Length: 150
Image (cartoon, rainbow, N blue to C red; front, side, top):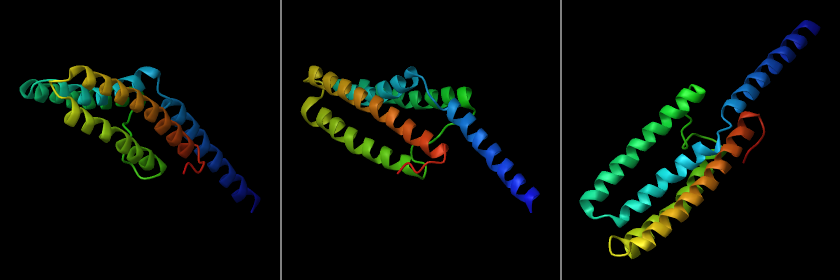
């Protein structure tokens, strides 16, 4: 019975060590959070462009999503989807609730006629996304560490 308990304890310790190692690899640098913020901010900023250019800018922004995925995969070996089950999904939902009104404001009140307003809203979206990116990471790391992150 003692050997089984020791084996179980060793297995749990190995699992926690693996989780700690994963957590260290998912502690992203500021540049990664900035890239995400700028990517989403560019969706908003594109609203200041005429329709044809806007579509091109949105296409570039979509390509940026794939570049971030590649960055993550090179750095950690995987990409963690923001819509994954768990407490991080709530953070993602709140991010959408925070950013969508900014995008709608850029479309409705901005557009090519008011580029200054659109750029200001894009800056706001960028800052909001950087903050949410840090929050999302903190929640994910708590989950990875075995804590209840909800």
